[in-house]
Image (cartoon, rainbow, N blue to C red):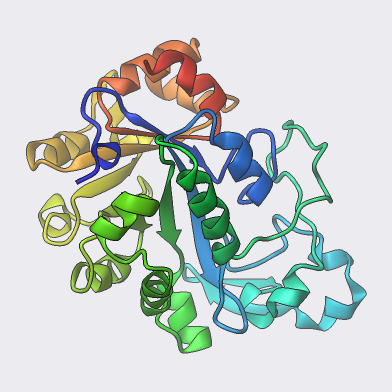
Length: 308
């Protein structure tokens, strides 16, 4: 079992959606630039019209791309239900990969650098794998991927597709569906908020699985549930630290032997400083490194200075 999956002495650093503090999120260029600072990159996967795994955080396009400026796609805008709310947008599942490549991405968080806006495109998961496999062939310090599978119910309802099955099949085709295969070529952790995804993989693969848990989720899974199918839990930082002490949910996860990752460290967000009651981001990273086995951050270039 790879130490990099379950580091105990030093937490792994995972670049959230790549080096997203400097680049538009989930781009090949952002992933490449994050490698010098991180052990893993974290990325999100949804499916396009052809059932191809593409790397994008959302099932819709307006937040990160210039799709609304393309007259030819004007009629693609549709209203659908996502997370129990109606949303009118352009949906990735209505676009071929060639059409997605016509769109250009931008930074979606205000006050971050925008010099790459309009120059980068949505990558396929295959493109990312090809780059990482080649990179890892030429180094002893292999880099890994935290692969978050998105929106199980959306894909089931609107595409009649089990996205977990699609990604599992894709990993088999790539020769990366087992821990042994990944240990040799490309370390992978499968992550999801939807437990159906993780349960699907648990029945078919020995890859490490991480249940993501959001503080505001109305139906937070119990630790007793999670340990039945996952060895890792990825916690919203508000479930790690509250009122100058560790949160009860964190304590329960630790008590049950789960590996604990924390997300998302955004150095330019005042909320994290309020949460930890600390203005010095370095001290926040140092404190967190005593609590977590994984630091999921949008500023890996800063985290690496303090997690030694």
